[in-house]
Image 1 (cartoon, rainbow, N blue to C red):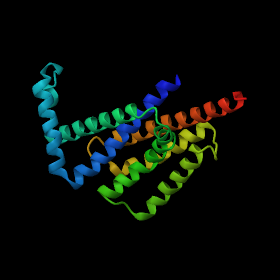
Image 2 (spheres, rainbow, N blue to C red):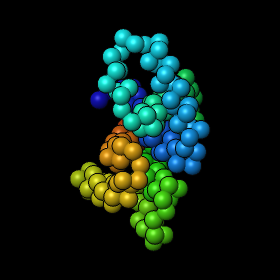
Image 3 (cartoon, helix red, strand yellow):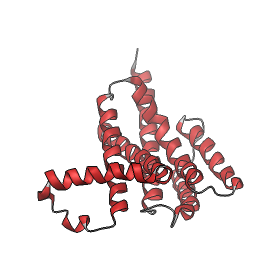
Image 4 (tube, rainbow, N blue to C red):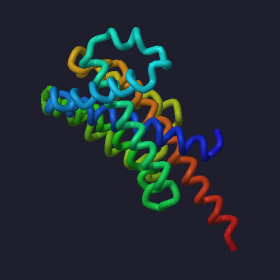
Length: 202
């Protein structure tokens, strides 16, 4: 995959993961005020874009629709921010480390804020976050099969906690897993690119 495409995919998945987790917490803590905003967004879409053929979607459960609309709008705003600031070194540094770390700890933290699990379960999240930080910084390397296995086990472990607690619960581990995977590939690609430039430089 071309470096630019991988970066765009990293930005997209990171934005979607942030939006999904932040709006989930907000919809529990500030349910009606927040979902009212989502309802207004949907009403605006239905009014100004009737040609999209969303009549079947409109007949669904209103709160779930408002939640989905807020997630998509928030993700789009975040993606736009990443695109606008793509030339800044700070943005590049964030995209190297944060998507992987956030992807690992995002689901446990969201669960803690929505319906706290037993504290001992967070030992796994802490260990996973430390391992992710070491790996993304290039200080710890594993075969790719082991990487994927550990990530899969982590998300399977925490996905059981969000079942029947949040809307669209299977999306959480799926988006988180993909965000960590792509973020890891992007960080590795950037390390290789930096190393190659140092070798070529006089």
